[in-house]
Length: 133
Image (cartoon, rainbow, N blue to C red):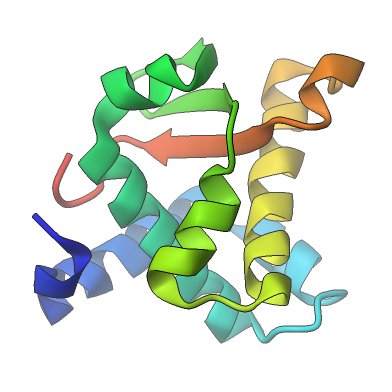
């Protein structure tokens, strides 16, 4: 399903899922970000919808799973996931960079520190339960 066919209800559900999952980390990142908390949540929701459309298999083809549970799958992706997402959703650089930072911080917290070879890779967390998964 193309993102342009996502209903308002699906997007609203995804916003709720993103806010519940990332919790206070959104506020921690947004306080120092050049974008508002509201913008950040919307970008994180768009990333979830895009990621859920790619599904785990296609994401794994472009990187590696570093953690998987019933709640989430954490990836280090090769390529330009966040850059491509920015192009698809007309995100400015600050929006993409700030959303990427939320994912990076949580991956570091769950999976441990970031190895040097992962610094150039894109962090992404696919939350299970996102509409479209």
